Amino acid sequence: MTAHTNDVERMVDLVRNGEITVFIRRAHDFEPADLADVLAALDDDERLAVVQALPAELSSQALAEMPQDAHAEETLAALSPERAAEIVEELEDDDAADMLRELAPEEQERILVGVEDRAEVERLLRYDPETAGGLMTSHLVSVRDTATTEEALDAIRRQSEEVEDFYQVFVVDGDRRLVGILPLKDLVVSHPDRRVRDFMADADIAVKPDLDQEDVARVMARYNLPSVAVVDDTGRL
Image 1 (tube, rainbow, N blue to C red):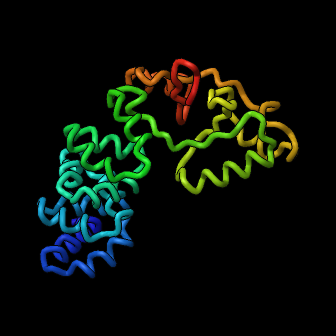
Image 2: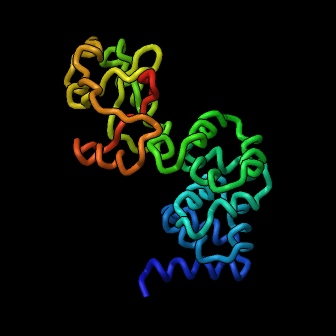
């Protein structure tokens, strides 16, 4: 038996012995994927009680990491609309859309009515889950083409507080159309007053939201891309 399995079993025992306060304290030390394993090992009623008791941020992270066959969306739907909305607000937009997509439209609306900024989640819900639009996230880092190096660095720092992992910085115009990719090495060594548009790389590779996910994967593999921009018919991110 592995150390991870032992940790999961100890957490499950805490729930079943009614030691929720201890469980919550220890849950803060778990990685989201490991906490997801704990939730998956509980029965439906136990899982619901834990998700209600944990801080919304921890609950959202763990639900997002649960395997598909554990049906995190069913736990979300079993919560009160207020609590479910609170958890959705903590989720990344793409994770929220993935979870809500498994629910009936009336269940989606019951939850989304309490979500303050629901527009982006609703936009993602419109796309087929097996297309670029269904896979994409709205949490990306972008800068204006008119920005100076100093302004671009400031913008990246601000956005990095909201975007945990990013592999590219996209350059957009005033209408949020993709016009380039910002090489980070060039950004670091450029003069603070130099304009981004003067040293950005061409944005030659982008995909449309309706492109099948397998075709997206082929594009990324062909050009060795860590991520790829998804743009609409007007070229907007």
